[in-house]
Image (cartoon, rainbow, N blue to C red; front, side, top):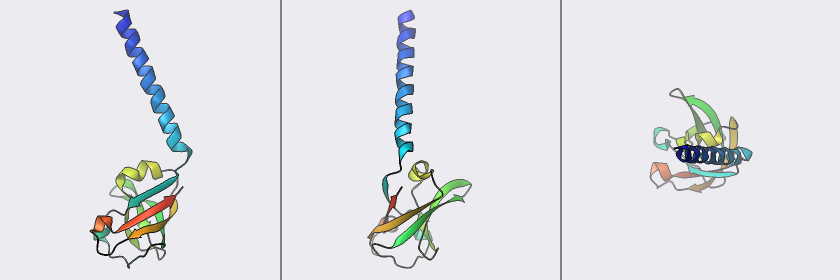
Length: 117
């Protein structure tokens, strides 16, 4: 009986320590993040080209934190994917660059943005 308890405690401590190290590595630096702009079909942005500068700004969308992607003229083109919100939560505004632009692609693959932390 005591062996089972000891093994459970050892497993729990191992899991907790691994979780602490992985979250510490994520907090150290954002690094380089690339993503396709989500929600582009709901906006009608001016055509962008590779190399254009965009801003990625934190804002509330339907009661949750979201990161809007804005052109240099402050026109919203879409959002960063929801899965990246925890990774981007370190700052309110990031500067990014369009690294892929294809006007004829499906909306969710039209613009790829690269953000430096």
